[in-house]
Image (cartoon, rainbow, N blue to C red; front, side):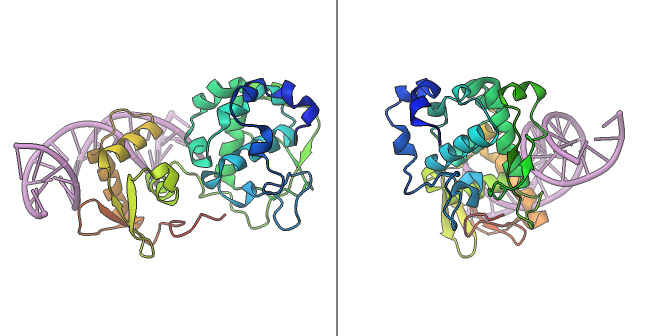
Length: 255
DNA sequence: TGGCGATTTCCTGATT
DNA sequence: GAATCAGGAAATCGCC
C-alpha cells in the first residue's frame, strides 16, 4: 500500500476525482499484498483480469507499483477507475494515453497476466519485467529485483482473451458490461441470445478498432465456430450455444 | 519471412 | 422487403 504520507504527492489526478483512496482500498475487503491473509492473499490474483472489480484493478495497479518498483507518480489512478473487463478492453494506445510510457509498461504487465496466467504472490521468487515490455518502459523501474511465485500447474497458454467467443462469454458473465446486449436463454446448456445485434457488432468493432464491423460480419465469424466446436447450431434466430470446445461460460474462468 | 489460425470481407441463396 | 442465417472463397492481420 502506498504510504498515506506520500499519497497526495503520488496521485494528484486521483484527488481530483470524487472518491478516496480508502474508498478504493477498504482494508477489510481487500487485504494488501504486504499483509496477505493466509487464505486469500490477493483477491485479484484469484480471478482472471476480465472479472476484476474496480477495487481489484486498483489492487493490481498498486501491486505493479510496489512489486515492479514503478514510480507511482507516473500512474494517474483516476484514469484506471474501471472494471477488469474495461481494463482488458483498453488498447496499448489507451494505456499510453492514460499513463504515458508507464501505461505502455502496465499494458505489457496486463498482457503477461492474460497470456501466461496469474502468478502466486508469495514473494519467494525473483521475477523480471515481462519480455514484451520495451526497453524504454524500464525507465520506470528501480533496480531492485522483485519476487513472486508461479503456481506449478499454471499453463502458459490458452488464456489470451482476444477471441470473439471469449468476448461474448465475458459479456455474458459481466451483466454490468452487457447492458442487455446478450442474454442467457439457458446458462446450464450454454445457450444465449443476441438481444441487440447491432450494438454487439459495434462493441466488437470497438474492441477490434474496426468501425466497419456489423452484425452480418460478426455472425459470419460466429458461424466459423461451428466447425471448431466452440459453438453449436441452435435453429433459432439470434440464438447460439457454446460448444464442447468453449470453456468458462458457466462460471468465472479459472486458470 | 513463411506458415498458420482467427477473423474480416464479400458474395449468393435460403429462410423467417 | 428487411433481417438473419448458411456457407464458400479470398483477403487480412497478428503471432510464432
